[in-house]
Every structure is written in C-alpha cells, then in structure tokens.
Length: 228
Image (cartoon, rainbow, N blue to C red; front, side):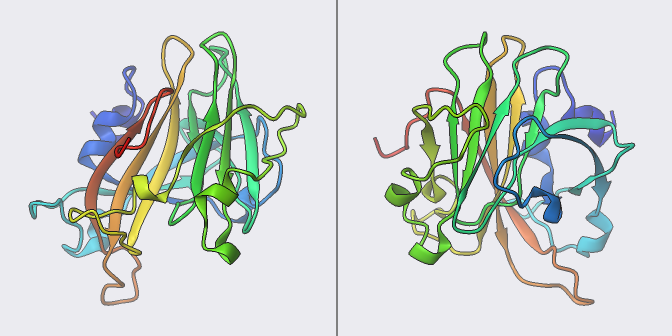
C-alpha cells in the first residue's frame, strides 16, 4: 500500500496520521477572508530522506515524513480552508457524496478551529481563527465572525491551542504545531484531526524539517476540552 492509499483509506486518515509525520505547504492562496466551497487537488511528497534522521517518534523510532502540496494533477481532492492573520476565515464543507471528503488548512501554531454540523444531512461550517496581535486569546477568538458566504452565524464548537500545544508535563510549548485536516465519514459527518509535532530547529543544509511526532487529537462533533 502506498502512502497515498493509506491516507485515502475508506475508514479515514487516522491510521496514516498515527504512522507518518504530515507537514503541509499550501502557499498564499489560502490567505483570503472567504474560502467557501473552494477545492483543490493535492499530492503527498516523501521528504523522509531530507530529514537525515531528524524525525523521531516519542520513543525514538524514525517515522516517514510527508509534505502535502497543491498539485492540479494530484490524487487527493479536498476543500481548502483559508487563513488570515488577526481574523477568522470560514468555509462550508459539503456533505454530498460527489464532493471531496477531505479538508486542509495551513499549519496551526496557536490558532483555533471552529466547527458546526447538526447532522450528516447538512454541510459543516468550519473556521480557522487567528488573533496574534492579542495573544490568540481563546475568548476573543470565539467572538470573531468567520463571514460564512450564506450569511449564517452558527453556534460553533471550538478547539483551541491547548488541545495541541501542551506537552507531556501539561505545559504550553511554543514549539508544538498542528497539521489539522478534516474528513467526512460514510454518514456524512465531518471529523477533524490535529496531528501534533514539535519543531526542533533547522538541520544542516537549511532544511526546516526537524520534528518529533507528538500524537493525534481526534476531534469528534461532540468534542469537549480534556479538562472538563
């Protein structure tokens, strides 16, 4: 099974996310206020050889490392959720079977994810929130308006940086990142996953890919913070 086949498994990308580090490079095309129903094609690029042994599982086993990039001929079809500094970007993900089953957004390193979907018969509202000029305060980000194109302001659930930026000692770690993706299951429900990684600095040669794998946060529709 290729890495792409593993990622596109019928039961979702969780197996892939638990056995490979996934980094993401989506470019400036994600930086827009409204990104509803925008789709793109993507490809996984094996960058393990560039790691030079720099990528490790938490118990020091090497893991393959893949970079997800846009490619008009790529085998992965997905919705693209934008990003804007000090703002919120909203998108509406379809529940229809003939539309993409995946969603990607830029790497998160203090941002928040918002989402709302009443059931599999409806699409899913999803939003990427940033408020770096006010310390990415979660309460203030929850008041942002993602400007969904249908004019709705749904009651969003939120996943904030504490879900992916706290280390084994339950301390905030500024070197933690999340590759955040969405996947629609067979019942039309959108589920979101945050793959956590720690950044260890550049390797020799200037490659910016020395990471360690820190697990996956599975965000279900009824997600609640772990301290509740």
